[in-house]
Image (cartoon, rainbow, N blue to C red; front, side, top):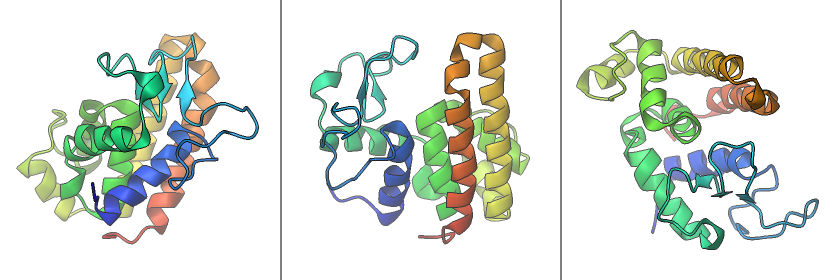
Length: 190
């Protein structure tokens, strides 16, 4: 399948966190030289997602054979379940990239609420005409920063409620800080 440039940029950046800094879209099944494991496959007992490959978790996708999941199938899941379902195709570039990352990491509904709060509309978790109209009149960099702030608070709240998740906090916060830089440096409509 051929995807848009915006989706390709967003997913390639997102995979740096979902898979590893060794991510290379041209070699999605290569061995990670450090750990000698298939890039993107984990089965961390501390991770509530359970068995995961390319960031696609068994808990959210119980009917998928995660161990045998190939990159084109994972990419299609991301496009349909996170890009289109999260209405990223209707958002300006910077916001679309950050929204996609949030959809993947926080869920489509929660990520929509972060976006809605950042633009001052009712946070109902559904991106509709009111949300899109408010986005059209908002400063995209400011919106991205406000979303990142909310995500940082969200991650800290997760750790407050469940201290066993503190092992992920630094990575989550690093992801947010790097997303700030990434979205600031993007052209608004790429």
